[in-house]
Structure formats: structure tokens, C-alpha cells
Length: 146
Image 1: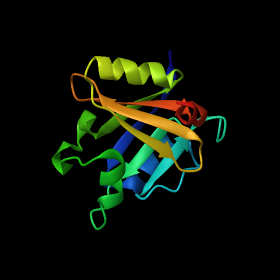
Image 2: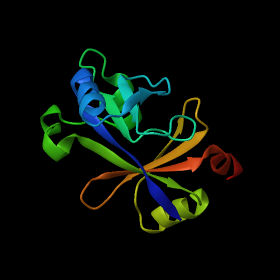
Image 3: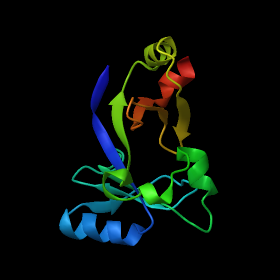
Image 4: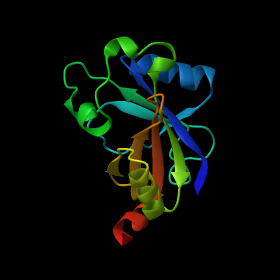
């Protein structure tokens, strides 16, 4: 079962401009973000960690050290970071990890799995037919169980 939309992510060369927009215009607050190996911010609207993982994730592109981002989320052409091309992925809270793995494999959809540092959250990433990345967030206990 797929649950609510969890957050959306924006990949940017200018983290500070995004921070200003989402805090000053949208009224979100910068909050907790795990220690990823690339720059960025998590922005919250109301509920904060651990009740929420934020509503907008800003993913910074560090041109001097892009390897951490490439390893975690993959590489993107810098020319694509305009308009809706800046939307990196959509994420949903989910349960039923084993069933989703089976479904993806049955339909021959490649997927990648990651564990979020310090959050106890297991992620599955895959692309839709239009190459939009989908992230499903499962409780880490589901990954440990199977």
C-alpha cells in the first residue's frame, strides 16, 4: 500500500536561493537533515522531525565534489536543472516492502535501495515510464525482516 506523498526534492546549484524562497516566501522552516555526503536542506511545514521528514528537500550540487550526490541519487546533466527539470523525485511513505520488490521484479523495473543514515528509513528508488524518479520510504524494520 502506498501512503501519502512524503516530500518532493529539488536539485539545485544554489542552495541558499532555494532556502530563501522556501523560508521567506513559502514560510517553511529549515530543520533536521541526516548527514548525507552532499549539501542540502530539509524544509518543514508544521510538524518537525521525527514526526515528519520535511515537505521539501533541497539537494545541493557541489561542482567541486559531486561524488557523494552521484553515489546516492545518481548523476544529472546540469542543463536539466531548469523548470520542472529541477524536481529530482517524488517520495511516498509506504509499507509492504517485500511485495513491492516482487512487483518491481515481475514487471522488470530496475530499482535501487538505500538506508537513510540515522533515521531508520529504508528507501527504494525507481523510474516511471517518463523517467521521473519515485522514492518509496519503508520502516527499516521491514528491510531487516526480509
